[in-house]
Length: 151
Image (cartoon, rainbow, N blue to C red; front, side):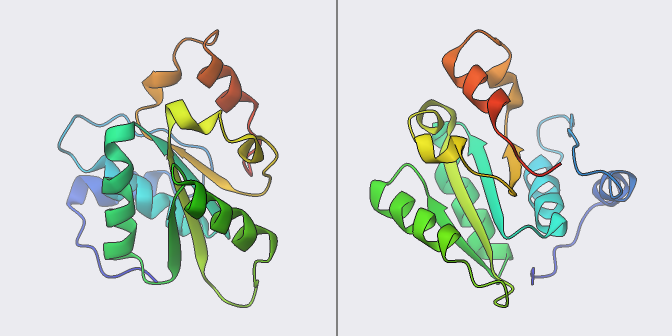
């Protein structure tokens, strides 16, 4: 369950307009609340496993955001070997009756160095600053484009 977030009218409109879609991109100007919109869209898709890929400098911000606004989730800093191992274990032994969503957060540079991620299925993928995979020939772009999130 998420804590009540008071969205601005433009944020409510964006969430309403994209409600029927599983794959969306939010191209809002800086300062218009893409973090809140993106996180809430991810949450509403209600997948047991969620993966957020972002800039290295934003990993802690995303962890703090999910911890502050979403009660029924476990967040993992996937740049940490220990937390990555715990994430893998929790994904493999997920209790479907728990109602808990697992949210793994990792940066672009580290994601392709964690082979387990490439074998994941049935998860929601969020790319923060997706422009960072604009070069389809870069290793990180190739890796991310081969991922198989739930459609």
